[in-house]
Image 1 (cartoon, rainbow, N blue to C red):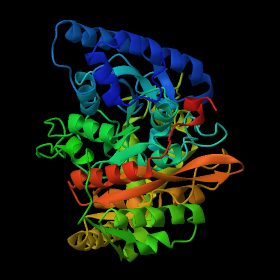
Image 2: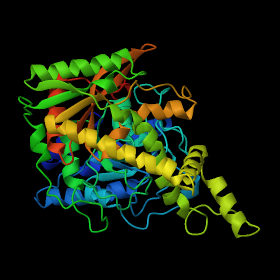
Image 3: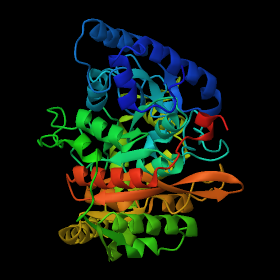
Image 4: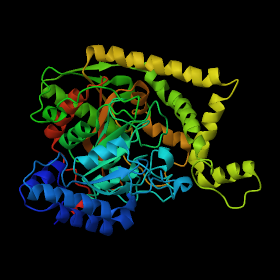
Length: 493
């Protein structure tokens, strides 16, 4: 049995009709992981015991004739910064290599309660610092469209696992584009919900005012279903919002965009660095929306070009504070035979953190230091406010904004050695984290590089808590384009 191209909805329906059992699904998924993991390295840890235990619960419901939950028997995996009892939560860092989850991340617990089969923890850039998956201490995940290329970051393994057919749905976290950008690189549907829509409890914090958990999937409908499961108020997270879940799935079925107001963000599309293939794919998608009855216009968001600069002050500043706890005493790797307490701190952190983590901790500590706080952190927060004001003005006239998700398709390993060049890969996604809006990546075409076919991503941005509109537009273009998004690892080509 090969379910590598099946949707979550189809798997649950087949289990409900007794076409096959959840245990057979677990057998199939774990066999696929065993066959592909050595090449893809999408997972830091595989958890067959958890998967089979969940399968038994689902099969018992089927035998009892009970109504199945939303994701009954669906193979799933979770980014390795999300706690799940029975697993390690390492953040792909040496400093947390042996940390055992002491409690469940709320979003993960809600997916498990919805019936998924937890296959394991997904590889990622260390502490979510990166845009390529190359900063993982366990080694990089590979792109299923071309194993010589990056799958994007930082939710590299979560994206690669879906694109390779190793898992049907995964969760990632998005601080500056870490769900949407790898979604674009791997041809998967990838959602960053509105800040506060999903609890962050149990997800190891990178930048607390920017982080948000969201799903990777093969279809927009599965993404909508996942958001319906994981969203909602959580008493363990004061930033989660008391807001009823809308019928997101209904928005994806028979989607109608006639009358919807959609705008191309023109100045973002014309930025230096966007490739002709990516630019043309976004314009073609806009033309298709217009042909489907939407009103398509253009807006400029000029302050957004400063989003990258603001993000690389605010993000590292918050990260330097959040990661202070990993010092070899309270949490994390501890060196042997320290000479004194200062030696313990310094050598434990020096050995535990990788190069990119150290770079961001130092950058953030500097930005928050006395004498520089107002010059850097204060100015970055003012820029953030201006960007948010521009987005609010745009959403007064339009329902959805269109941009590329990434200025280029997946690049080869080692192609970007300069960290500043790497940071530019998130130039379209970062402003959305600064404003707290929702956005989704939907595959919108392909580009060919060196004889390799690689997916291109379209970013649809919505106002706060406008996920239903975003899902409707995303489902409409998904259906209109009808792309074959099976990677070579799925088709066997």
